[in-house]
Amino acid sequence: YLAENAAGRICKSNGWGKPKPWVTFDDGARPNDLVVDHCGNVYVTCTKEGEVRRITPEGSVSVAVSGINTPNGITVSPDGSTLYFSSYKGGKIYSANVGQDRVGPAVEFATMTGGEKGPQSDGMCIDRAGNVYCAGAKAVWIWNAKGDLLDQFETPERPINCNFGGPSGQDLYISTFGGVVR
Image (cartoon, rainbow, N blue to C red):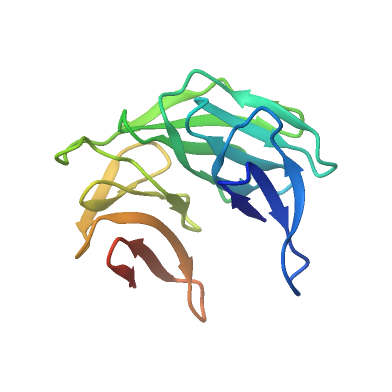
């Protein structure tokens, strides 16, 4: 799945060839980040609209969460029961319980601070233990599943997003304004 921001749509690929348009937001919303849960639902942050939208495997779109100041990064817990998303300008991380047909309510999970322009909470990922990672203005922040801050580490340039990869899936890759670091 690919959030095609400028075109206001989500594209889908079968792993070969160019991704094909799957869902278009007719209201002009521009999708930012997305995550897919265990049931095949796609959750997408729409920053300007202040929403997290849910797309079913059949392509039906609904608003899962609204009224969030600049939602941005998004991830789902390893067991698929909790959705986490960031508020770019607010520096807040939210969590919401999810099920096959429901989301929420969203509650504040953690808060980021710092940065000349504010915390700039951006892209997110989660590890196998359920620790939540979020790119901020100067560092990647890490919380456990209870919302306790475990660590934060600075990157050479402002981090934008992060995800696990590598041969064993245990390397953290962080995209920054200066490139990708591991």
